[in-house]
Length: 114
Ligand code: HEC
Image (cartoon, rainbow, N blue to C red; front, side, top):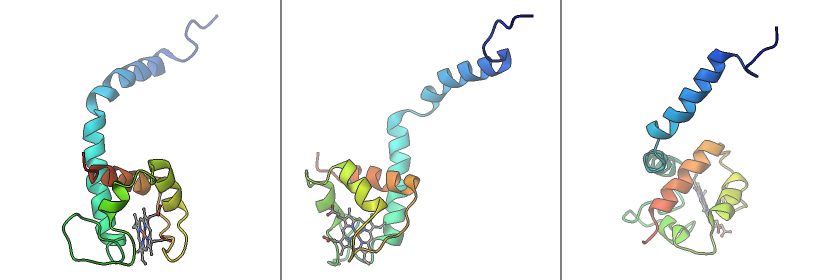
């Protein structure tokens, strides 16, 4: 018997339903907001000893303030991603996961002056 479907009909159905539902359930802006919130909480925990992570906050000056990082055109998302994956001294390597880096980048994006 020749098979009509290249994949089983049940998997085909699941793939189709998923392809239709996923974009509806997770609009890009909602996902970005969740990432940015997570990024802020990571930054408060892991970065605030050296960086001013929020626009208003106690001054620390070991590293550049995040509002400055976010608004510096030289610090593109690609450059920041590379930096966070492999920072150089004096900044320590915090072993951030790809998800954590994505969340931090979303948070930095939210600090941009529009
Ligand atoms: C122990 C202190 C310390 C901690 C903790 C720290 N940083 Fe840094 N960071 C620095 C210093 C110092 C620099 C400046 C390095 C330089 O200019 O050579 C820096 C630079 C940076 C830069 C700028 C890179 C560039 O392109 O110039 C970014 C972005 C950054 N840090 C993000 C973070 C994030 C996100 C965290 C938390 C997950 C973090 N840092 C935690 C000390 C720290």
